[in-house]
Image (cartoon, rainbow, N blue to C red; front, side, top):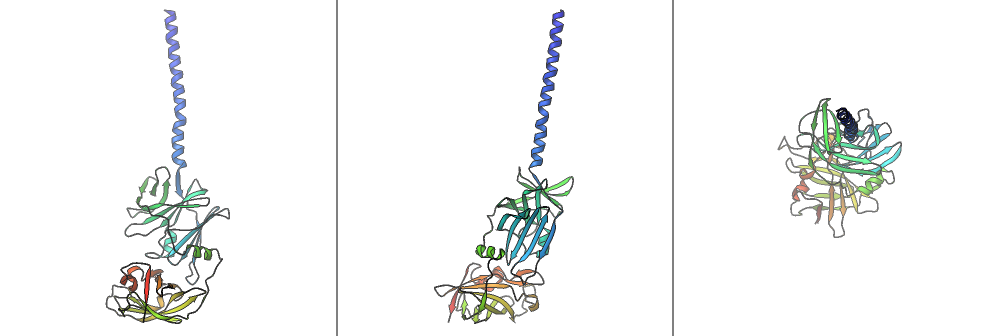
Length: 351
């Protein structure tokens, strides 16, 4: 009997030790799960200083964002945007083209307020950038991941409600959140998976950004008339050396005068707005020109002569200084509209 009691007591003690060991083994796994979640969360940094130069008479406009040792440099060239990143005053990511909406429905100043840097526990060796993207109703953002020598486009995310707050990105779930309060967050919808931004002039742009080249221009020696359809005399581009005349917009019959400059050693000619030639007031709700509001220094298009006698018109649009955005772009430019909204725009020489 005594032996039986001793055996039962030994069994009870063994069970307690086993339970104690199991509990001890479980505790680290809970901590690991919590740490994994935290380690993969990138949150918005708020103490960011900014330096800007939005002078439209300069070759490009500048925005620098600084946080501790990290500097994000954004440069705007007409309808194009580029980013480079420095860490500890050394180049971290060289110039890359990016999706950013800074000219169609917002100004550079407004876009600046909607750019967000996301870091993990303030570690500047890796992070994410949220840039304002093209939007129709709700705000949308292009998400980029950066680390040493790399800037990768992740996707476009949409805020489905009109809310304000700070942003975060969960690298495990690939989800972007906006936190309107400590206890409330809204998940953004991933709406498309675009490829990286591509520009025809990337190499030339980067040389300009690095200060290695400055495009020289000379007096134009070009004469002639070009059109999509020469038989349509209402839509044409006419050039007489350093002056020009252009059919711009059909609804209010807008015609403008141009300044023409020749690019050195190339069969390329830069078009700049000189003045309003004529316009009507047929449709008050449609585009019109106020002469003093249009930049006379920004290039509105480039005409490139081809070996077959035709010319390619690379159209940019007129820059409205008051609204700080491009106008008469896409099918709001008469020659593109006449070309079925298709680009590149190839013009025929007219006799």
